Amino acid sequence: MKPWAIVVAIAAGLGIVALLIFDSDERGFSDRANAESSTRPGVQLAAVAGIANPEDAIVVIVDSELLADEIEAQLEEVREQLATAREQAGEQAQEQTRERLEQANNTLDDALERVEDEAEDTDNLARQSRLEQVHAALTSIQDQIEVWLEQL
Image 1 (cartoon, one colour):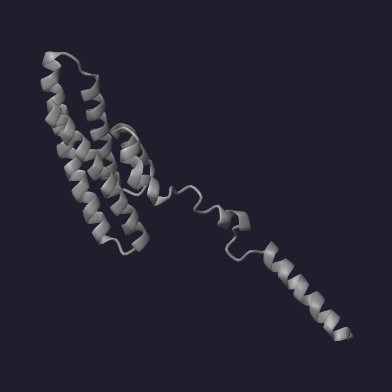
Image 2: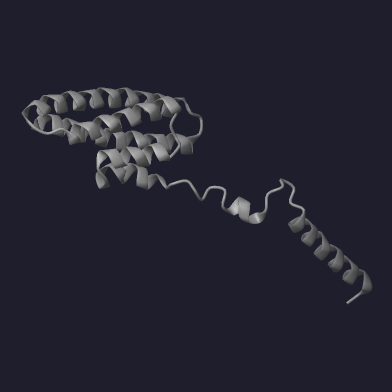
């Protein structure tokens, strides 16, 4: 091997080591690798309403951090109304349960419209797809509420 080839190889090796040590965006390799590890896959959001009870499904959807604060507040209100409706018992409570379920259904309907608007307004296709999955999960929850209302 020629002496200039050895010098070039050593310089290239030092350059690679320097690039690894002094990363240009001040994040280490593991930071970039873990940057998106906390997001849930979309499949879970689409299927969560069929797997869990509506209150737990709403918690998972709110924890996804995809929605605006106003929509999250509406969903928390729906979750509280559903929890209150489940706790009531007796004949008089049946009417109160119906009222709570109707309130939850109306609030959820408003939240569904806002999620749909948010999905239409975004330019990010991945976010749009995730919001459509949230919409499908919320629609499934609304269907469950309507079934409960028919049973009362």
